[in-house]
Every structure is written in C-alpha cells, then in structure tokens.
Amino acid sequence: STLIEKWSNFSIRKYIAIVSLEQCQCYKDDFNAEYEEYQNLHTQIDKIKKNFRQLNEQWKSLTPGSEAYEVKKDKTVKTVLHHSSIL
Image 1 (tube, rainbow, N blue to C red):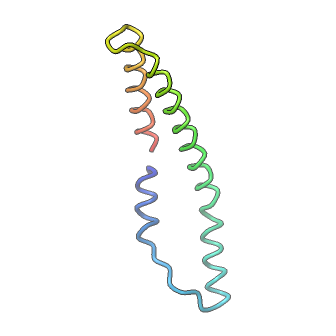
Image 2 (image 1 turned 120 degrees about the vertical axis):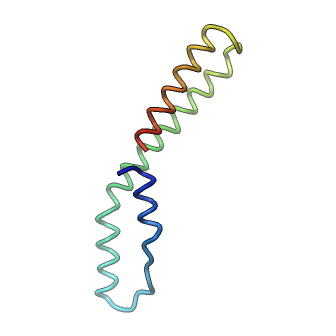
Image 3 (image 1 turned 180 degrees about the vertical axis):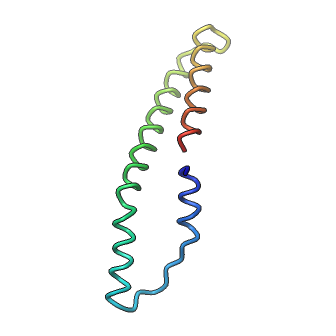
C-alpha cells in the first residue's frame, strides 16, 4: 500500500484516554510495531526533499528555453513521477 493509504488508515484510528497499565502497554506495543516503518518513511521523505532542493538550486543557474533547461525539466518531471509512484 502507498504512504497516503497508510496515513489515511492511521488517521482514522482513535485512541481513548489511558486508564490501565494493560491499555498503556497495548498503545506502547502499537507504537513500537509501527515505529521502524515510520523511521524508514521519514528517511525516504528526507532523501526526496534533498533531491528536490538540489534540483531547485540547479534550475536557478539555467536559462529558460536553453537545451540544459529542457534536459533539467525532463529530469525533474521524471523525478516527480518516480517519487509519486513510491508514495
């Protein structure tokens, strides 16, 4: 499933006030079960953000309409489509 589907499922999950140690442990177990995946997704998103910051910096030095500009535009579109399919 995609990142959006995962977060949609997460957002509808409602927790009520903790009133027992057993309930606390259940919440802790839920958190721990999902935390590694969260960390992996966070790392993936950080890499994507870094990639887009680099592309943005490269764009600033290009002349609109130039061959280099068009090549960078194509690469950017491919990058966006690739990251869209991951998320």
